[in-house]
Every structure is written in C-alpha cells, then in structure tokens.
Length: 184
Image 1 (cartoon, rainbow, N blue to C red):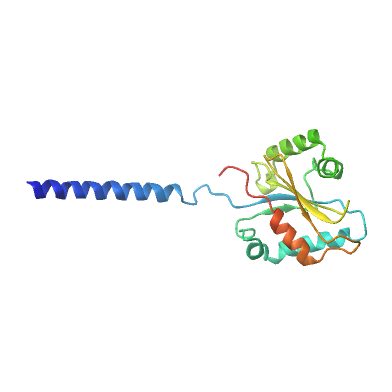
Image 2: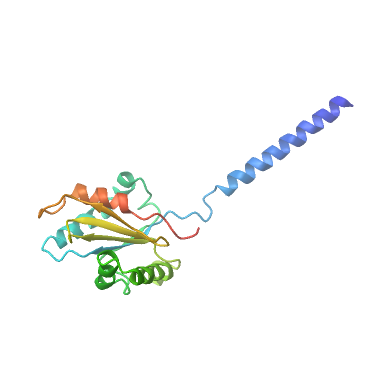
C-alpha cells in the first residue's frame, strides 16, 4: 500500500509540475507581444546640413541595419519612423518649446498627444512610443522623449561647425530609440 501511495504522490507531483511549467511558458509566449516601435523624427536644424542629417537617418532606417546595430527588431516587427510626413500635432514650434525651451506645459501636451495618437492608414490605434530630435542649438545633439516619462534624454555630439558623421547619427539613434511603451 505504501508503495502505491508513494507512486500516486509522485504521479500527482509530476502532473502539477507539468501544468505549472506549461502555464509559465504560455504566459511568456508571443501572443499579444509588441516589439514594433512607433517613433517621430524631428530635425530642428535650419542650416544647409539639415537635409544631410535627415538623409543619414532615413538611409540608416531603410538599410535594415537598425536591427543589428541597435539590438532591436525594427524591420521584422513593422516599426514606423514618422519623418517626412509627421503627425499634424507635432510641429517644429511644439518640439522647440519642449526640447529647447524646456516648457513643462508643452511637454505635458506632447505626452498626451503621443499617447492618444491614431493613424488608421497604418493601423496604429495605441499611440506612439516617443520622439527623437536633432538640434544644433548650443552644439549638435540628438534628444528623445519617451511617452509616459517626464525627462528628456540627450546625446551630445562633437562640438563645432562640422556636421556629425553617419556613425555619430546612427549611434545616437540607437541610444535614443524609445522602447515600446504601448501595452501588448
């Protein structure tokens, strides 16, 4: 009898262990998982190098190297960089107030806008993850704001009149690329 009850206990234990492991692995599955980044690019540079900087960012994103260089799944998951056609509420004036003038009310407005953004053409109905900005004011730099946060992150580049290299822009882009902030 004792042998039978021990066998029954082991069988019951193994069954519970298997059920627990299956439950744990299914909760970590990719069902509902999001890894597509939805980001806005804004270049506040008004010098002749503006288009060169935009081209560097565009070439980097379209090259397919973002995945390997930044350690993300940009192309595979259908990430979007609003660049040439920005969401209408994200103007240079708003971005200047947020990133250059550090206006708190404008930052709050930007955050609400990013959270509530919708784009039926691209089937985006959960908002945007953030904004990446380039500016030459007080030296070349790129900055970001991540939806739901309260701080702006800055990546300083080489001081001087020379435009940053493609490598500088790509490194800054990777460092500042907002994480996915939308719920799965």
